[in-house]
Length: 371
Image: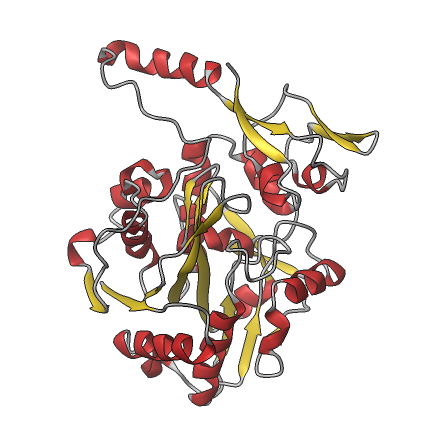
């Protein structure tokens, strides 16, 4: 598996474009290009945050990929995403504007088709179908451009997790509610990635996010642009760059168990991995595995009980809450209400998916343990 690694100091257009060109050359992407190709770029636009906050794909990276495509004669280029809120014109226009995506026009169009289609999954999948946004379903070629981040629920967010944004709007919380267990949710993400099957994945790690990602963390620049055709092996590689154990990220471990990760076949092209990389701060929700000394026959009941005693829950900082309702809107279990212009959390029924934390624009939702 060829893994392109290009060092880029900051989001200046020409250096980023040159890094994109080198990545495309390393992966022979030009061989795939045809003038009539319908290309869809899937960025990470999870929330309306400016490009200076490393929660979303930086527009300079998207613009560089669009420029590269245009120079190869491709003109049918669409930027398509379903962020964490409603999937409609009013909301997505706001997302595009705040995240800086308007700058790619007129070379690429910002998706304004807010329909979705049902797609059949492979035989044997737990998910028999997925309801996906129409541009993804109708694309000839999908370029997945994600932001490298830690994540409160999954531990890591990269190429696989970014494809969750192909499910329209508030149907995403429904998937959290359907698959509340991290093993089942991660399996869903893997089945979704295999169904969408992007032809190319680019990871924006020029500036990345650590701590309480995917939206409430802090900056941790790696000054890297990563590109590969294999998003599963690339996520394994990128998690290692962050100082994370890929085997502790459930979706990556599951991908390894299914033979999707080719870790022994990684061939790095471009720049070398810098020495002395600083490990990323983990989300508060990630706990140490303390079951190693528990006898095997007791481990399962011990983990069952401990997981409930030590379960993490969202906690509101009332001084920061403005009562906007984004948390209640995104809650799949519908256990959040707005009372007296403040969010109110009802612990009973909470599935600890942390959608509320992701969607809070004020960083007013923290994580606390039950004990």
